[in-house]
Length: 276
Image (cartoon, rainbow, N blue to C red; front, side, top):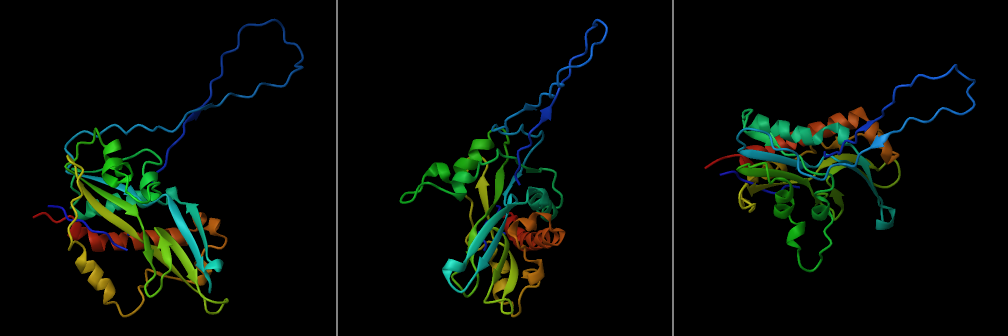
């Protein structure tokens, strides 16, 4: 049986545009042009909100990743009023594709492992639920995954989503995949990368969560016993994106982030993918 846990580890819609030009008809001798040429019409199409067509062949594990759409840039000051947070689009970094690659590597390139696409915004109710006092089942992972996997027919679904987590030894929270800068003044500040995401396994028939209490214990224990800072998290202050929008074009940040996410997945997935 597949195992799952939660740890403190892209979706894009493509719009097609086209234009058509009708052939010219025979005409009388040309006259001097007196009007401006007409602009070429551009046809716009709305992003699809329907599930993608299911791939052929058996599917033992459908991989659904929802961590690669944005990069969180956070600054922490001495007081809460000095804290800042921005989100930068990074769909072209390929983090969701990276999740699939690491799962396939962990399963020995099993051809029955398949990536499952989903409509843009499908996970918005999960990330930003409207229900407060009583959870709304429609905002939970089972209902959301069920909504776009009707034709996938996978035995199980491995769902990776960003979550919030606390910086060790503080009450400061980081969100998903990103970088933070913390400290006082310019000399005492330090920067770090972070990759905080959750993994859930859902039964492909009932969509029930198949969580295991001890899945990933080895990876968590290894992290807790580390006596020095993880070099994958350490970020030079000069590489911290300022302004935040500069993160999207930073090759160094992209490569470092992909390395961190891959390392976290490689630590966790062997426990998640074991069968009894």
